[in-house]
Amino acid sequence: MPAAPHLKPVEDTVPMVHGEVAIGEDLEFQRRWWRFERIVWIAFALIVLLDLLGVFGKGYFAKGHIHQGPVEVKFERVERLGTPSIMTIHFAPEAIHRGTVQLWVSESVVGDLGNRRIIPQPESSTVGNSGVSYIFPASGGRSSVLFALQPASPGVFRFALRVPGVNEIRSRVVVMP
Amino acid sequence: MAAILRAAFGYCFLIFTVRVVGRRPGKQMTPFEFVLIFFIGGLMLTAMVGDEASLTNAIGQIMTIAIMHYGIAWLRQRSPRFASMTDGTPLVLLEKGQWRIGTMFNSRITDDDVMAAARDKGLSQLAQVEYAILERNGEISIVSGDR
Amino acid sequence: MATVLHAVFGYFFLLLTVRILTRRPGGQLTLFEFVIVFLIGGVIILSTVGKDRSLTNCVCAIITVGLLHQSVSWLRARYPRFGVIVDGTPLLVLDRGKWDTDLMKKMRLDENDVMAAARSKGLTSLTQIKYAVLERNGSISIIQAEASKSEA
Image 1: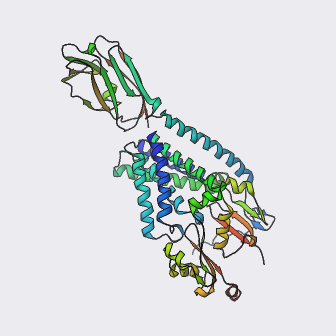
Image 2 (image 1 turned 180 degrees about the horizontal axis):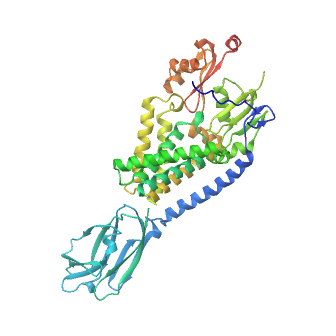
């Protein structure tokens, strides 16, 4: 035996306009909503502006540039998750000793920042001192090494680079989600 | 885990954006607005999936969105306050031969839009419209004058 | 930064393509038109996002599209002439028993489309229609002749 349906008499529960058309308008709420909408649009415009300037990566403000003696590092201070980018290290002739350039990078470059490829291929790579040491053959003159990075997780990561005879280069990279 | 969070964020952000971008879907939706929905939806989709295009990931994200959608529908039914947040309230655009200028402008509705809805009802003049109401789903409903 | 510019370009390109390509989704959205709209949207998305599938990138793109859409709606409400460019204008295809054949050919509309709209209004013959208007969203509105109204 099915249960009897639960019934309730129909009443005029929806508010009316001029007592004839049931609409249920809430103009007070809507005014507040419009104000809120305007604030959101301003915030959105700001976000787009910041993005155009590169605060969230890939733009003017995201360019990192460190000059330390004969070594010059160019990198993205703000990276994006899973998106390829390039860190370039330029060596002036003074950094080249006996036809090679030695470079130690902290583990975070290989791990957190997701180093995928090094151009040119290093002659040798050695692990140790919580990092990796590379030796690149160099023929003199100005030379550069490129690290192709692709971060695998968001966060703020520190990294360090060492070249013999030069102060350690330290910086930070923010990886946006 | 990260995929689930991305799905949850994507869902909330999409609801928020679509709500704020304005409500002119329903019968008034022109082809162009149609494309906009795909555009926004697809952009969010790419971010949600990212590089993890596995089946496990897809199923997890679908579940997340389904649960959140269910949750929001449940909240909407429970609390009228929440319902007006997600859907807005019906708005009077025209009453007894008077336009409500502020409402019209803020909701980006023009007299052409109202007249299009009136024609859909078979009315041939704006004067025959007694009330025009912008419904929560973005449709304009027309109450014609008694004559 | 490139994404924002891509999104702006994509938005206007879509606006242009859809405006030129079709007038009939919405009201009489056929499967074919549905596919086209989906396809165009998808292709533009791919080029907008590129290789950068991060949340940051996509959220910025969405915000850009949202802002653009809002500004276009604002312009549209403010300047009726702009609205005509974006949405088109309603067109009278059947005027008191006379077809505007030229217009119908250009809009790729035939009598069956109008009759379909009339049937959904409960009309059984084209003679009961006084005016038929092709609306901006592609649907057809029917205004009945007075005589048939009193019969019904």
